[in-house]
View 1: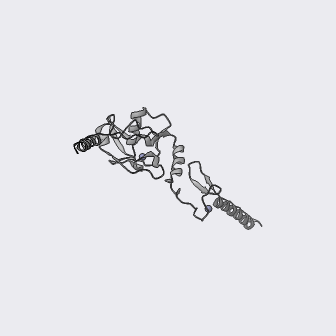
View 2 (view 1 turned 90 degrees about the vertical axis):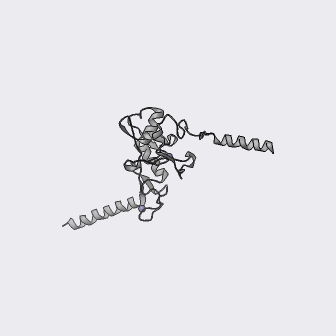
View 3 (view 1 turned 120 degrees about the vertical axis):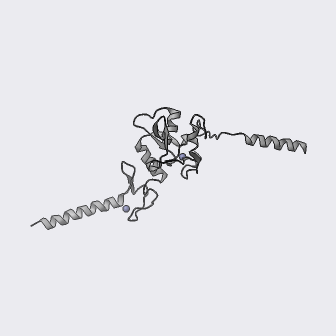
Length: 188
Ligand SMILES: [Zn+2]
Ligand SMILES: [Zn+2]
């Protein structure tokens, strides 16, 4: 009995210790509450939910304070206003390379978790969002006219939007018909 008591005492001691969250897959060099980021930064961050499309990422660290347009967190340091996610990224990797954005793998703008962030181009971001199904209309499986958004019937615009090939063909056909009709009307 006395041994069991000693064991449970030890267990209580162990569970009281803070075990950093570690995932072998991702860069975890900044753990939640990392002292390299100011305490007033962490005071505004809560552990959120796991992104549905990327459960491997683990939960988002969500900025709960004042948000900028599009849902980005705002953080002021050294008299300068930062987007909260850029602040945590720059702390780890230094200044963001010219022409690059700090983008969200989790597609969750207020998220500041470093392993959810990467530097990329806005175009990569558009592709990401289509993949994630967060882009406007990306969740639809069919176009307005009921044609399927499958591999065969879908083409992408340069900004990452999906378009229906069947509708595109219809539009071209109508345009040709209209041209033909107006040609008829104009002919003497
Ligand atoms: Zn996230
Ligand atoms: Zn269509």
